[in-house]
Length: 472
View: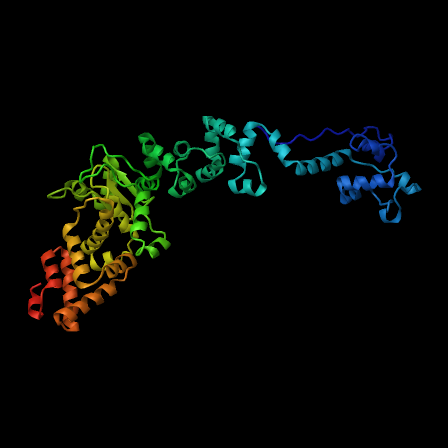
């Protein structure tokens, strides 16, 4: 790399003849002072010299202070002021003036540096934070393009700074997401998903789509990030592979885009998702609509290879349209389901989670499908998913309690309110004691967890005593 050492102005050498008289201030400063300060120095000119190189510097240059500025008026021509004869180290004066000039003209100095020097100051010698603090101007697009096209230079840069600093510094020229990821995966071997956060957050939907359609880049991403971070990366770039069939497996032309699903849920469920929205719940950036290798990667990571590929009577990969994995990522198979599938999975993201943890998977899916069908009915989308689960939740709404209680349980985690409403219903309409009504609630929850739909229905509709309850 070319040296960035600034050139020091050449100064006149001292006379090698010791008998030659030392130069006067006038002689030493002849070339460096303005024209109107040549000749014999006056007091005012000494003051100007002080302003030029500083009081302290003048003090160091004079062996004794024979001129006292406060003792003489402007233009004084007394003996002391008119015949100041002191040895001046011209090299020291030049150095002082050079440093002062560099500090005053930082931008001029920066512009005069060569291309390679400029690049390395921005990308290598200085960190991104130091660049901001010192106010150095960022590289322009032309220089950035020239830099990243130079393989040896990029290798040099990768050896000096982290990929995170490279990405952050590069944001000044707004490179395309695909271009920046290509560079990151090519020149840096150690990359974490957090390193990519700035560029992922700044990318447009079109830029993300371009990445999603580049198989070679996705292969590089998996190799650089690792298997599980790669899956998160897929959801962060909004992988949305279009169907390869003319119609989805359960009807409809294509899946609802995640951002659109958020918009629909917040509109149609506005009475119930206020707190969820405040907490930042959404599906955009957390879902991958995938097929083939990525569908298998996600499925094996969540269910295990045996269940995903070889479970009986049907491998899991062929039995579902989508799922939410243990990390909260949503996966949808691109040719399966219907336009309500992403809405259904999106509602899971808006739910509190208490229903799943206390009442179980089947009740949670029933509530999710109940609200999914309310939304889809308004959109003209036909759903036939989770029929048994949906019907049991519908029975709770129409017979036991209200839609609002179900919503507060599902979206806000108020499961105890649903339990209280169930016990009140059994007491008021079936004449059960508090204790027996509580036992029937427990039986309802147990049968829902095991998928015993008929028994769960009896807990809602039948007249039950202790003996009949024992049979459930």
